[in-house]
Length: 259
Image 1 (spheres, rainbow, N blue to C red):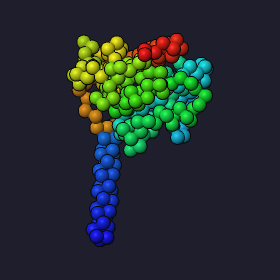
Image 2 (cartoon, rainbow, N blue to C red):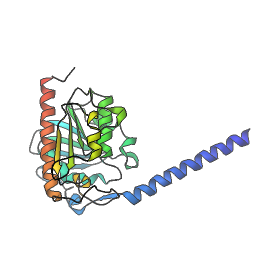
Image 3 (cartoon, one colour):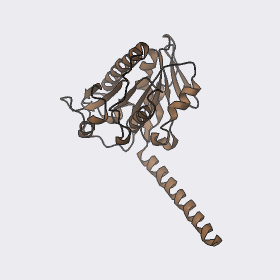
Image 4 (cartoon, rainbow, N blue to C red):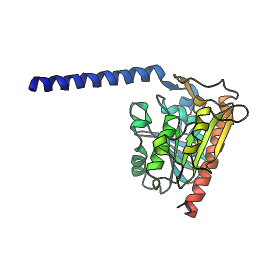
């Protein structure tokens, strides 16, 4: 009996090692590195303070902080790749906390927003933003913790079916890549029911999935070739995200979240 138990433990340990090895190998093959432009954007300047520690934090230097923003990154991506898009948002008055996820997968860090809030107790109001898998997990966090954040903004993704936002009582925005005529990917359209009926959807015609940040490499297969430049896409993502954050702020200040 003891020998059988010992062999069972050895087999379990071996399977765990194999699974972790496979995850690591997939991560290396599909990894999206931060572009040189993203690395350059990591420098602090007169407008934005960049802090690297447990989290990657962007703070405004010339504008009072209006609200905190937790950011969940996409899978297998260097979180620094999001700095070019998030930096102007920080400069507009938001403390942005980009969360490095275990194994670079937000599914292993769904509740990380709670830790971020505990580490930043001076801010009362928070929004959560996420890209790709990070967007899906941001939606899951908001769905499970409706009182924890004042709203959710998803970049190019949709909530998991087990964490629908249909009845979510606060603002829930989607900013998504779109065809030249503004249509979302078919998978997004099929999952429209997972968003609140009045949820704003902001299309970016000609945008592609990976250009929500600034990356090189990676294994994501795009649906189409970009119809706009990365800089043009960033400009529209920034404008739409700021619009969403302002609505979230207004709702929070009025205290009129839906019952």
